[in-house]
Image (cartoon, rainbow, N blue to C red; front, top):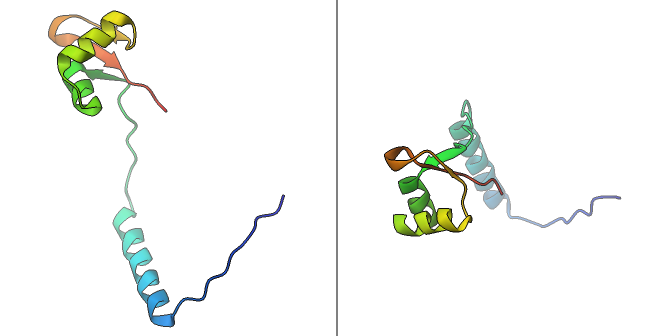
Amino acid sequence: MGTQQTFVMVPAEDFAALRSEIRALRDQIDGATITPRAEWISIAEAAKAKGVNRSTIHRWISSGRLEARGSGRLRQVKTRYS
């Protein structure tokens, strides 16, 4: 299978500005590291990430919608990768 290419005419000054922005972005990410998301997060972190109340997270754990470990203040929720 071949890759279809589309060509667009862009004014030279716009192309120069775009090139400058790409260089600036490259400079910003140069040396950056990617840190994987934690596999287990706190109830509070899960609630914040989902935009719900902590009690909702507890209900989701009780219903089996979320996997959890620990107890009390040390209880954590397993994150899902999608």
